[in-house]
Length: 411
Ligand code: AMP
Ligand code: MG
Image (cartoon, rainbow, N blue to C red; front, side, top):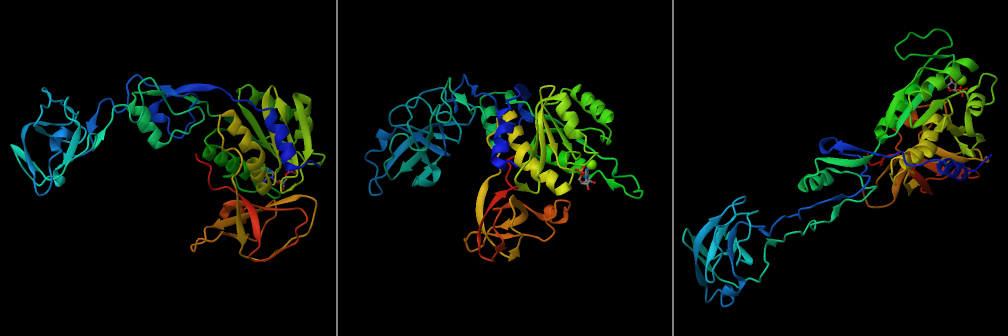
């Protein structure tokens, strides 16, 4: 048996970024930027007012106080989008609206509501202002020639706004990995087929494709591989012809006579490891490269298959796409319910549900019954994997536990 972390390290050592592409800005949300985008224009492109009011020269207000207000003539009005055609002379004010260019000579804004009085032709000011008040500076957000965002940053809606503000109508992003998914087994049928005796529906294909798409990668659903050496070989070869960035299979990797995937992977691939990982669920694992493409042979049991995906495939996809959120975030919480478990020699990853404590205490963790690797009902409600050391046996309410959150991939 190999420890989870050691197996993962060996797997991730083989993974490299898959490169970048350019996409229209409107399609870039959620993608990972592959290099910072330079701007020619500073943002904001000019000094402008943050408030509706009057633009003045600060020094003209030096003597203003509530006892001795000053009155300045209002010589013109400046609207956003239409700069003033004359400079602001000493002793003058101009009416100005948010976003309008500060006229030359002007250096402070007095909002309407801070004036003692104003009418179309004059403004009465009862306190001094300092230069720069309510002025948004040229280049305050982005200096001319600077780059916005850094390689590896996720393009959030605000980042889209930033990119739009510098006129980036297309953006360099890491490619989304294309992940081919095969289920395997003679017992599997399509989910819309009636079940004959001994058959089950091919649910793993759907859960894995859902997981891959939710992660932000592209799932390519492939045909079921039947438990036949030649069929598996042909199926994997046809998938390689599609030039995927990764291949994931489920089932066929245990020690049974019909578990051919592991041998075929070894025959077709390089550095293919047939592992027993010290984790439960998810002990069997096959990984390596087939035709240079990272290959992940996950267990067939539906719960195990998803747990193994989270632990091994997700971080690999993250590296391919330049992402830093590959490892499930580790948190801690307290158990709500008692639970007795047999001691063993594998790390237990129990499907649990963590909820924030409304009184600000540690998160409260429920562990539903039905933790078998073949069960999905509890998993369907879960938002975390509760990490229980191999030898822990009787878990008590209130006990501190670590958990890996399934809830916060950023995609
Ligand atoms: P295997 O590793 O192929 O022996 O499969 C382990 C268990 O998982 C068996 O009970 C299979 O029937 C079940 N199983 C395998 N593949 C799938 C699948 N695609 N969907 C649902 N269950 C599966
Ligand atoms: Mg099977």
